[in-house]
Length: 120
Image (cartoon, rainbow, N blue to C red):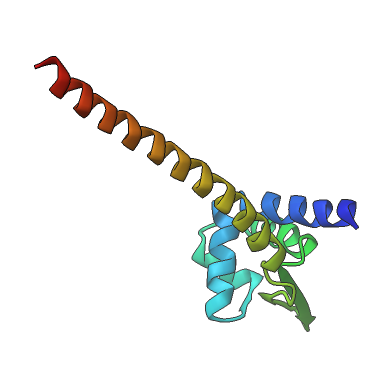
């Protein structure tokens, strides 16, 4: 189970690491689109867009359907729940670490203020 989840996260984060692919997801969040339409919006070749869509499709973030000569893309069913949960765990971890750091800084400021008064 852990290895499967790791593979899913790896594929998702690899797909999301590219700005064009993130843009494609945003676009498909507004409306389904053909690969030709996506290529036009992102000013790239059909071959280039097919590669981007293929990476998103392998990650389960996009699905495609061919009707005649047109391949239509839409958001995948999977969503980003696992990815969001993974990020949230680390967000909470770092938030707790920064809270501790804030306490130390406040203690040092208080000590500095107190020590400064004693020297006068």
